[in-house]
Image 1 (spheres, helix red, strand yellow):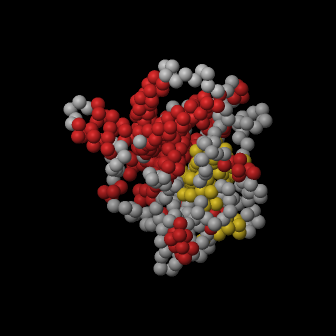
Image 2 (image 1 turned 30 degrees about the vertical axis):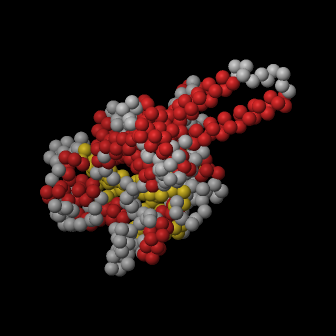
Image 3 (image 1 turned 135 degrees about the vertical axis):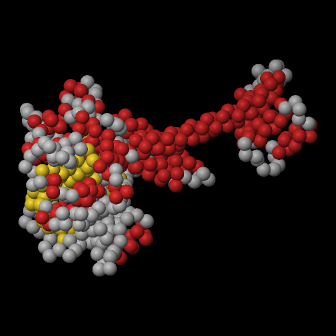
Length: 550
């Protein structure tokens, strides 16, 4: 068991990193932002939009995409693929709200690990950037592959590749939990970008100035022309991180005989821990006693190995989704219908949907916090802007709920069970309810403020109407032939009109100004139990004293 790290070879290794980022956009216009259009319009951008197979002019759909499509329920199909031409023509859902871009200039990854004599060279399978209509979230999907990789090296890559910044620096000055060096290479092996985890001063200065983490240079280069929100770099598309510095991860590992792995090996793979002796556990037995029950989907796994196909274990631990199995069995490795194909298509989409939902909810919560933090009750402009932000966030949340929020996306047993496990591990349902309550609380607050403002306006108008009634009756009496102006000239009539109009207008405006104080006086006047002194005091308070807040 102690030699598993070197003796166990991963015949087929695949690792997919999924990095959710929050797009920083201006919502003052009230229009839906379309960042993918900005990316397409950016000159010299390495990103190219992928034309989905469903929208291409090809007369046939591949069997792989067909199997992927029928995995999902109709509402999830509309989210992922949109509607066909008949649905679009009839004013239906239209095209998919997902827009996918790819770049092809990064072909390899070279990883130098501390203490290892030779760097590891991995092939980049694909780099994709996902945008979602009406949601300020983008997802970077980055997959690397390798053949015949020692288990220790596979564990190191899983543990260290997807780090956007170091947690700390060790005694040698290397970034904690990070690789010594990560380099993106092009097709000719030339370096496109490299990490700078060891540059402690850069990370410390950035956090001190901006109060947000600093992203490593190679990940900055990966997302370019998108730039960090607080960066001095010029760019229309700006982003910041939503979650923890270690990206959500999917991994597929194929062994000659997976039964040779110890329980400690499997747990380390599932939790994505650093490699260590196979006979040990990464944490205490008490802490891990229900690991298999809570994190393993063992539909294709049998400890007794009575059937040759029962050698596939799927582990889901929230941030991680790891599939291990035996290379020799076609149920695991079949390129058309095996677990490997499902991992690349259906399982990836399940993972994408689950983490997109969580990222969108975190983004909406962040927007609520921003709105509250920028509210200044003494500033009318700030209050008005706050109302606009909250109403906008409420509308986005409602559209998110009906377009993107699903607690179940498939009735196929495996896909249904795995998605349920993902939501449970990510605690997305609880997060959804908390976000919904916060947004509804804000909406109720705005509604209460609107009702209060309308009630205050009604009170003011009532006061003005009551006091205006005196003037109306007076002018009515004056109009009862007390002054005969029928024989007067037009100039005299205009003079009489001005003599009445100007003081009445001034009195009306003055009444509006004093309407709140006058409403308190009228309230006291109508109270039969109040003394004359109390009523006179309220009358005096119309002009003297501080207005009470009611």
